[in-house]
Length: 126
Figure 1 (cartoon, helix red, strand yellow):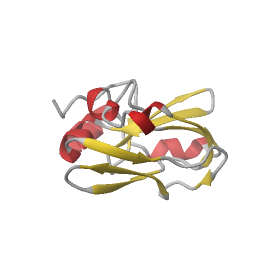
Figure 2 (cartoon, helix red, strand yellow):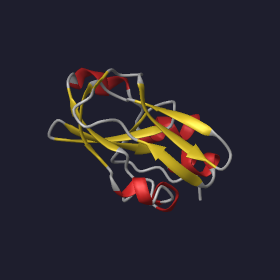
Figure 3 (tube, one colour):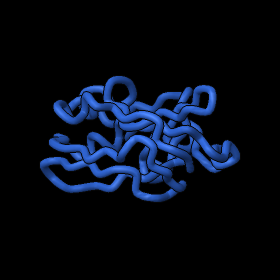
């Protein structure tokens, strides 16, 4: 585990993934990132409605090993957060691409998506 990459997602070089569906971007950390972090014990999610810029700190993930900032892959407004993670942060380790998503962002500028990595580029990077 730790190197699953999905072709239907876009990626950042800081190991976030993003899936856009009708201007709403679901964001999480990659399988590679969760395996590097090891056991995740706490997630500090942003407030719904918060405006965020691409590259800014989106949230914080704490593992038994370290504390890591997660960065916004696009600019926009926080539309939703994964409340399940407040009581079960380990869901990120168990299902980083499905149940372990972090936030949904209402995308402000779709042209920012062009700078993200596709699955092949991300695989080469890791």
